[in-house]
Image (cartoon, rainbow, N blue to C red; front, side, top):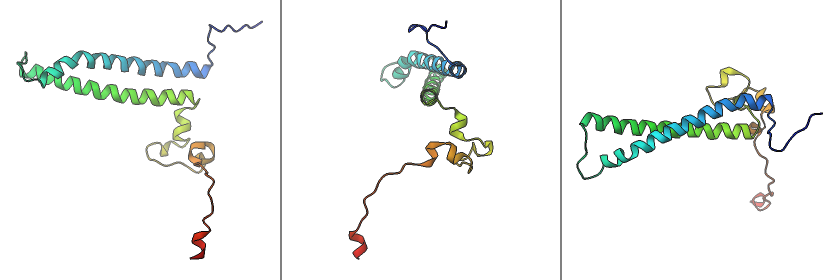
Length: 136
């Protein structure tokens, strides 16, 4: 008899295939955030009025490393949020980009993709007819 316990999560094959990408993105975000946080005091000292220890080359390297790490951490955070939302909605990037690979790099979809992807069908809102404008 197959028993399921509340403390043992049950993952499908699809969930297991999606996990490593999320874990890699999560740990990459943590690492770049940690490096950015460790460079923050040097970045703040760069703009202070006091004496800055170090050579001009080390200051420029520290400044550039901070800016690049911050930019990379924010971009990885964006990808992490996107992939978490895809996993939460139980979709894949194939369903988001469509089945025809030639349309992946341009903002367009094939005619076969439009009925298959509900997000492409748009939203319908009920509207009230405007009878006053018909009398003009």
